[in-house]
Length: 409
Image (cartoon, rainbow, N blue to C red; front, top):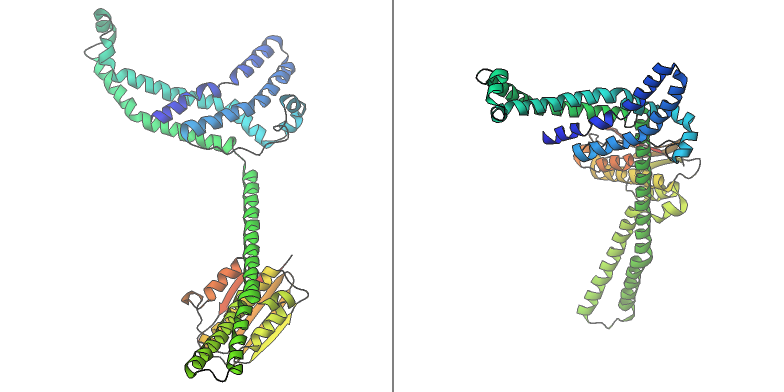
């Protein structure tokens, strides 16, 4: 309650700050009959003073009430000095935010000051009434008996004061909330500006997400190169050396030969596993030769027939290529593991600004993206580039996985 009452108490004078200007203009015009000069003097003072009063109101709301009234976007006149702002007065007058400020300080301000004064008066009256038995003793006895009606009226004063103090938190809170809403509506950004800021925020988030996706994709390619050019080559060299040891030293003891042969086999298995890992991270052929070649190599390694059709006008952005490749790769992996299919068909076609990917199989159907088959992760990966992902898989088949990826550069 004390915070609300203090907030209201500090608002009376700022809300009445423009009253003397218009009171002077009205008095001057009424006495002289010269309304136009009075308006020409008063209007610039109001327009130029509104930003200062707005800043004071924002600080008052922030410090005393903890409410942040969002500032409006500064106009060209707001960014200049007072002299330049005066020269740009026509531009200031045409701004909608200027008229919202002026309406708040000039028209609504006195009404808010009256409401604040009423609440403060109620607080003072309630305090005076609740303590009437105490301060009544400071009044001379004759005046106390004749004017205050000690026996009959002081209990009414006390009861009325207590009632006012009991209602004061609600009155002060309602007045403070109403004033904050009015300030947010008139001193804050308008609807068009809020929409513009929201659009800027959305654009910024989209750019940030795009940058993050590109950074992750670049890091994936870097890891693939490091594994391919570094670790993989070391394993190949190790496997070759172990093979040479087996081929060139026939007199090795049986135990040593068995150990070397086992190490040679494990090195070759590690190379094969590393090849699969590298292809899963980012196949080098995808970066070097594009989506068609990468998908052709992927289809050639599968143990079931794959009909592949890739129809592209030109290479799509690398991030889109990567997502399309992994959609096909994961969909085909699910076909092998779960579908029990005998054949599958993969179609990648560029339709306008969309890259449409379809993977169809003649398996058992019943695929559920929420069942942990990897389709849920594909949906998230496609959604990261603002794409659409859909799975059609009735029980008994066929299953069709569709992804539409925006590929406009």
